Image (cartoon, rainbow, N blue to C red; front, top):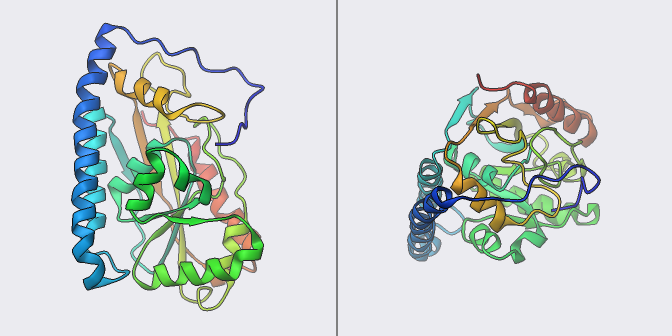
Length: 275
């Protein structure tokens, strides 16, 4: 993650009492069993799925979705959904507040994340990302043609690709300007006239009496500490996921125009909170 807000007030140092550590032990052990057990099942299934179906994955995405649903239930973090998921050929863009986005968005739809190449080397997260079919790319316009070919191949096989155009995770209270580089690939043939893009807004509401940024994961915050904080919470907050109306790529003049439209959809809904 980039250190976007080093000059701002940092969250309080993590303090976990005996009851909190008990919740960490119980939730952590069960969640670990589900995640790594599911990963083992996914890898075994892929041994059969890969030679038979090649790039298509008719079974393993359902394993990923089940693991993410169960993990959220173990954490006791409820997810509320509004809007309709896109069923046509295309990709999805969403704001990015936390590592929890991976669980939340995967729990609702069979998707494949598009991530910066550095994530592949992150301990734990990188391993899981590779196993679940994440597409790793470098945000460089000079690689636009290669990325277009890769995206087209994945989309051709029915994969729903999901992008985080902000380029980094945030404190959960704001939406950063969308970077437009990745959108250039969608204006190349054959994608321009074939696909739609759907914007998704993810809104976290902190647990009662906690910092509003409770679920945000930004700056130089480490994954382990944030995971412990989440697992130790006596009561969780809520997550709302809003699916916006999809748009056709060829309805826009260029990458900047479509990025601006999708960013506005996400940003306009982000102020809404769950009552």
